[in-house]
Image (tube, rainbow, N blue to C red; front, side, top):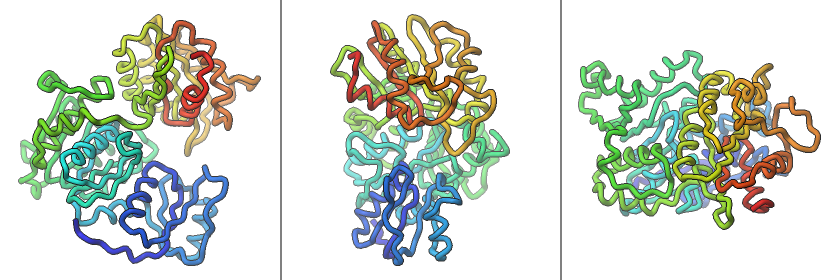
Length: 445
């Protein structure tokens, strides 16, 4: 791999525990052990001191302008990079294999990274989830490839330099960063694909099918006439004998995308498929966190209607006797924008299974009058879809983030576990703390 130097002596990471930031820190610590790294994060009881020798700041999108460390370091005139700037820096000179899409990008990029490791290519990777095989989301390899998860939420993926680009799907999400709506989202994905020498795209997605069609007509960038476009679709599922640790049709689709991407860089299909057989999954992506009791407990990060539907379909594919599915909506703004889509997902929730919907997790946003879980449950209007009220006498109309969420929600879940054999706890907020509580002390199990 090319040797790059790091001229900075002390790098300060703001929002260090964010999944994208922690991957970068792991890579920097391995590649540049002589560079001092200090950290701050809202989850810390105490941040590292703001030493006077800090000469570079790396911040995540989540860092507010009023963050005390950010204010102080900006006042000092210290150079400030966004996370995506550092990601491009550490991948300089390597062939970037960038996986993006509204859904599936974490799983897909993790699968692809693992395939490359198993194929002996010693890749680097930075992925938005903890890979169970490595207990890490970042790796500093010595090979020529760097597998990146291209984050579309804040448009970070648009400044990557993909040699190969994978796009799983294009749907509305993170509309606070896309005032032009789906048209702007589409245009950003198209520009991302235009930069790649090789594209792997899901043509079951209508917008990606349009990209392929426009490329075949020569309507895309004239500078990309040599671009190679590889397609995949659900119609090909029968062609692959896949044995995956993560169930569900959506994960098989992710696997096919990775197999085709691997083939495009010279890895045999058989090698890729064998590599996937040893892929153990990702933390909070259909993660089985307790299988030692009568009730199997799964934790999942899904927070968009399409993702929630895919997790539910995967859960039902396990043939549960009685499934309890706990969901925490994420962001009042997202919930408002995709309200009808969420209602449609849960309107078909099958009996005898039970769905419990907790209060909306508020992250980088504010409460919106009338947008709450109780009202959503009322609109869904099914006896087996219920509002999960917090315990301890807290008013059920209160929306927000509870410091002791596990203690507040676990009693209401415990009360519904009779005859349950599968418990799914789903959402991108702090609902994971409830899953951890069940794994540590499953009172009904």
